[in-house]
Image: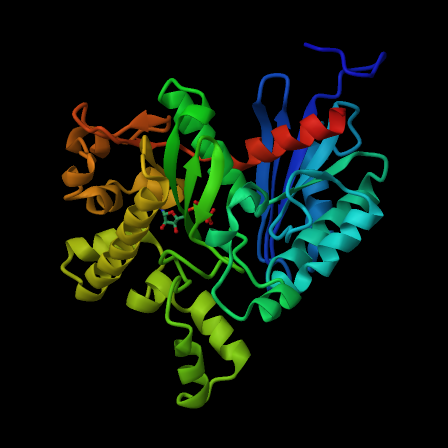
Length: 391
Ligand code: ADP
């Protein structure tokens, strides 16, 4: 192992990754010497009955859980803390060492991500209070998408208005798209620069990206994570005039429409549940609403696959990741069905295998590989953090 700058005491090779969301704090402690995960956990229901009071209490609980196992925030092996931050705007296009100025910059971006950035900021502030001497790094969900060309990130609205208010496509799930596109190249036995891939991150939130030679050139999420694919509770794409119609005809105010589209739409809005496993069970019992929800979800996915094939021109692999992408053979099969004309041929047996590693699910005859690559967002954040903290 390389020595770094420390000359005495144990080598500081551990990174704590904090993902501080609106109602939960997730954490993982990783040892970067061997990528081993030493601890992980989640504190849920922050501010809800039966949960902890606030983010300060949640972070203290994380700290106590780690201390109990001899892995506390005060341990000398801890090199840095990495924070997932949802929105980096145009200012933060890579992992950034957190200073007062950087924190102020992230605060200025709250209007762009009112549901996410405030919780991220609280997580950073509390961790800094607990360990003010430790390097803390912000890793932005938007950063991987900073390379998207203007033709793909600019919305076709009045340019002056767009520029004044920072209205453009930013994209999210960037750490996942970055990690998975690289891992897919590795699976293909090639360097990232040599391959073009479409990454389908299908979790509760869902997004697609087009990655050319390791560089992201398009993505389905936009100004916020609402655009694009059908998600667990988000609508994804719709005619913007739906919003006017809901305001004028249904009499809903902006907050009600925001909540409708972000929290009560998607699979949940279509059939009453947002978990693809439950939808599978209901489809097996001939539930028509569940079947329709599945069909709408898959149709949208296929539109993006087709669009990104056209964006890339040549595609080496279509890669599925996150909860649904890694686990639902049915979604993968439906999304890839009938695409032989585009060189995509799934192997039903490979696709049906339940496994935890990165693997191909396409037939040997498929000229475009189809793969499943488990995402590792925390590891990606830890690597970015460690690289920056070591200088
Ligand atoms: P998040 O976006 O919250 O990180 P995940 O990537 O963990 O979400 O994905 C969660 C979703 O994955 C669940 O809502 C569920 O729909 C889906 N999922 C998990 N396991 C399975 C499975 N075995 N089959 C189908 N879907 C699954």
